[in-house]
Amino acid sequence: MTEKQNTVPCFTMVKEQIAPVRIPDSFRIENAQEITVQKEPCVSFGNEPCTRFTCKGAWILLDFGKELCGGLRLITREATAGTEIRITLGESLSEAYSALGEKNATNDHSPRDFTATLTALSDLTFGQSGFRFARVELLTDSPISVQSLFAEGQLPAFPREAMIKTSDRRLNKILETAAYTLKLNLQNGYIWDGIKRDRLVWSGDLHQEVITSLYLFGDNVNITNSLSFLRSCTPSDKWMNHIPAYSAWWVINLCDYCSYTNNLKYFAQNQSYAEDILYRFNSCIRNDGRIDFGDQPTAYFLDWPTYETPDSETGTAMIILIASKKYLTFTDCAACREIIKKLEHYLNAPCRTKQTHAFQVLAGNAKTNDCDILEDGGAAGFSTFMAYYILKADAICGGNNMLPILKEYFGAMLSRGATTFWEDFDLSWLNGSGRIDALPKRGQKDLHGDHGAFCYQGFRHSLCHGWSCGVVSFVIEHIFGIYFENGTKKIIVRPHKTCPNFKLKIPLPDGWLRIHYKDGVLQVKAPDYVEILY
View 1: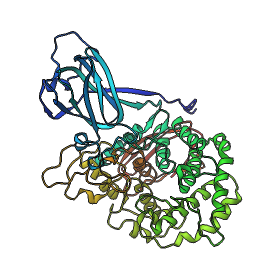
View 2 (view 1 turned 180 degrees about the vertical axis):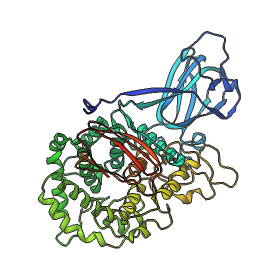
View 3 (view 1 turned 60 degrees about the horizontal axis):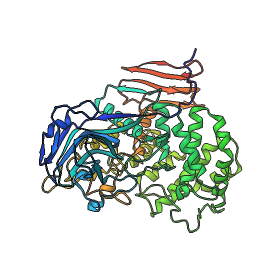
View 4 (view 1 turned 90 degrees about the horizontal axis):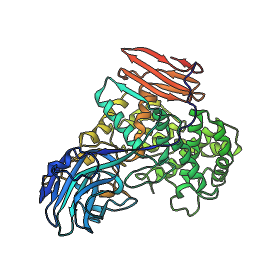
């Protein structure tokens, strides 16, 4: 008998009410601590004490203890009709203090700095963004009394969720944080890239989110909704998200999703569109192997650090090459065979960055000495987007230092107060900076407001980005050593020699994969249709 998953579940969102866990600061507030007390979420005529904003300009700063996707719910007992407040949400404490324009603070994609109107005996919710901190200021003259104030967060409810636990406490925290980061970005039936900024479906950014979502939550409509949405809003003569490589990423996402779920019906529904993409790529590659996208502004794009550098063309070629090879595992395609032949010379092209070198490995050019390049300086040169691919390439080449490197990199964000993983992070940002849950001390840099680059400078930088979740997939695949062949019909389990003891339960298309690994001894349970190899 196997445990059946009857259907791909429809998305369901659940709300959570979270009271502030601390008050970092306030001004002209009476009974400030009352706002941290969890009370009945309903307006009351009772005599219990309220938090009182005594005059115009009174304000309170709140910490909800973790990153959330949602807004603020104020239950107000006393307020003159038309009373105005200013709400400033922040992913860091300093962002909650910021004004629009300060260190690139914005309201892009989701307003996080705005005014709202209160009245007496009201229960009102304001805002929809990603935040952990909130500053509430009274803008009008009459005092107000707030009975309760909650963060109202929103999360998806999946009927099946994975369980992963290791004997390494630091690794557990990294895996839990990455999983929570992804879950926050599974909103309203789609996979967003960020909950503050980038509330969009980006085809390239989606890849790690698709894989990790399958491992953590099984087959779900957030994946197919996102892939189908990208297809529906991108005519076959246009590039997805206006980036040629992102059309190749869409093919990769389609293949990886259909391979894991064995959803051949969905592949067939998208086959013609995928081949339109591949034939269009082939027409853009000259016989000498050079890629020519004409005057496309983002013609070559691997990631932001390599954008408009020689590495960007090689990186783009590798993504197209990987897409073509994956597609051929499903069905023959003349365009794919021609693309592979014409792009093979990029496998040995000189490159400057770890991520470009990693994609050459992932596209089929792995050499044992590649580990020296990929592990040089530990996590130096990593980004939250590219960490998965660099670590994966290192593992393919026989590396042995992946676990300490990933703990160095992702652990550094945790050490500075992160409760989710960020749009980007560079280890050099730690020099002379403090924590995101404290204001910078004199002489310190602001870890949030003074760093970032490209389109994510300063406070515009997102501190909860779905593409940073790939560390979960990497650990499952290359530390726990779980390799899927023929979809999930054949599973090889060979823990890496640096693997800690672990317990694992992840959803398969029909049932669960359960593994207990302790002191070199493996116990594996899987549905009857799965062949297990060691």
